[in-house]
Length: 407
Image (cartoon, rainbow, N blue to C red; front, side, top):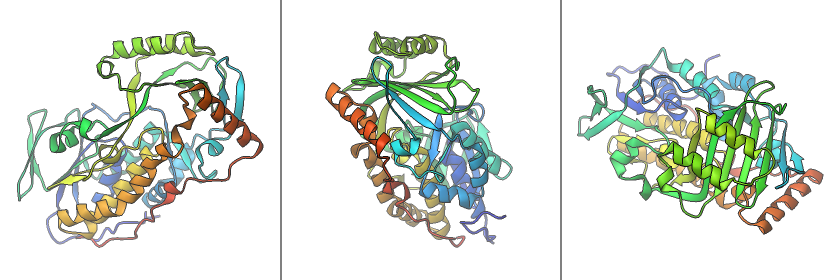
């Protein structure tokens, strides 16, 4: 069955060229839609190969319609993790409550998808690898815009010119920094830091999450499969970001060991596993909030433009929706200035609603005081006896437009 969405009508004019920086989620998704509407697409990725692995991510609401139009909904349904329960523990490791993921996150059971990030990335890559150019192990050094195009110098020294450039290179986007300035101008720190890594599943966990809490600290073990290793999460509250540790893996491990010293449950074993893990990812929980997502012939998409933070669970969904809407705008408007303006008009309210989830209770799973922790535990116990039927309107707040004419 042919995927629906943007038109594939052939163009009689020379194909416009676009460089997409980033090959995670929004980059390949955008490449798919732009190729279908007649662009010659190059995807540039700093890593030497497609990045597999990574923690599970969610595809919800409007993003589910995007993947349906791409024709990959059956593949994602087959890859769906189907987490069965989330168990919350107190400081001594005793059970507070055990709930379905939908009751906790406000999703729609049977419609929301949860897949490994690497699985989604691999599916997207497989869709476009034969139709677009991928350049791995390289990145943009300089951009020089003119009325005719964007002259790009890669780190490897290669120089090429494109009609358009799109930064899909994540929260810490080099494209955004080169175009708009330092990240600090746009980064909204949310008061938390986190570390993610994998460790052996010696606990017999299966398709479930177990989360331990004390005020200002949380530790979780996530079994995405039946016999796989565990995704381990360590999250802690800190009023100011630990700037000195952000680029020093040794300092990150030391900071986590200090923060979680004396913690109960399985946290000591998690800290030992962290010391030996080769895939520790440490960062702050934050959002990217910008007044504009484009300048001249260069635009941003996904986390590079509007990262919502892991606290919302909407990063991948915003990336998929943003990619579709940017491609739709470019297909409907031959002039890139008009297209970028249309893209922002159509997506900004949706982005704002999803970013606002952190202000509307998304961080309540990580209380910072004893009183807030008890209130959260009371809420969880209430959900066991009277499960919430509420969903998050933000997830589905944008209705996708239909087919667009090829420029």
